[in-house]
Image: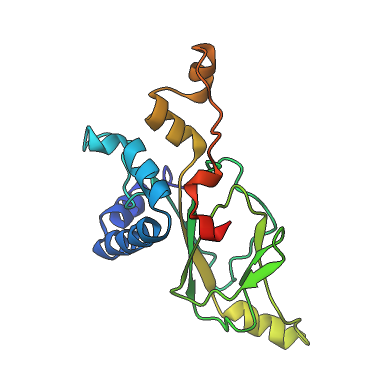
Length: 199
């Protein structure tokens, strides 16, 4: 999409509200997952070259996804973000007009935990390790309720990093180049990235 609508993407990148929101999410990452924050910041090529095209543009996060589908709520099926780093954190924030007490809860399948995620609230979690989706707690009783639910637009914003980005920042080369050079490409201390009280 960024290649189809470059002007819209540049407006988003330069938007003061997006910059402030990304900084707020970055502060939450630093406060709750300090080691992950430092890992992301250290991998940012913008630290050495502020004009690097791969620099972090969303606070400490190199990537951002704005999920929008008009009047239809954005739904996601159960998945793990297997391209994200195992020791990494993803941040998701819902937005829109919807009844969060009944619909679009963030569900972690492996944990058997569903969290209400009202518009404007942010959840930070290791998206490559936990199977997750969004679920509704109520079934629609009629076609009218289905249409009503669809009319209440719900979208999400996601801040994240991908493992290939981290490898490039941490090793100065891609994973395949590192393997060819005989370097260790496994990240052993995944649990060390999280506060012990969370384990």
